[in-house]
Length: 205
Image 1: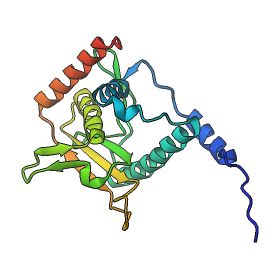
Image 2 (image 1 turned 180 degrees about the horizontal axis):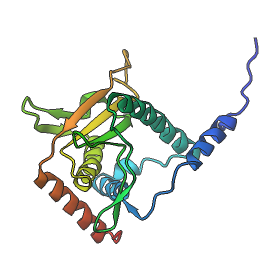
Image 3 (image 1 turned 180 degrees about the vertical axis):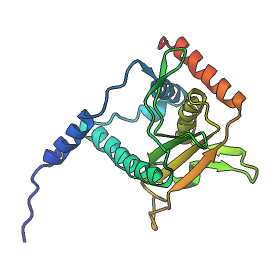
């Protein structure tokens, strides 16, 4: 028996991913995600200094998330007739936002995530729904989603989360989770103000 590797660098599969990524519309102006990424890096710089992704690694990493987002979005469209992927929107300060989904009837922002964080440490909350602890990753997701909720005047946010590494040890798989966050008007306003001030302080606005 013999075996040969044709393309250790990704070959035509990586080229296919590049072509798919090239079809995506380019973002315009300052996006919410840029501000949130900068905040996350400022809070935990060591987490982001462990080494950079290669171009190939980043493409595959992002495309896995895109594939999961498309699958979940398709099912949400089937479940809710008015569910939509909204067009990007700009707030009064010039910040752009583009949530994964929007359900006008229930005024719900939907965010679809593929994460490598352990589900046991993602977010913990008590019987009343108050957050007890949150991972760095959930914190990052929350900042962005709450800004979207402010921009779309949403009453709630639903996170649809697939845990790519499961438990990290046998048995590996864990069920996806859907979490609903219900922010107050004050929560949304203070989050938006914090993001704006960070963007100003960092010269992004």
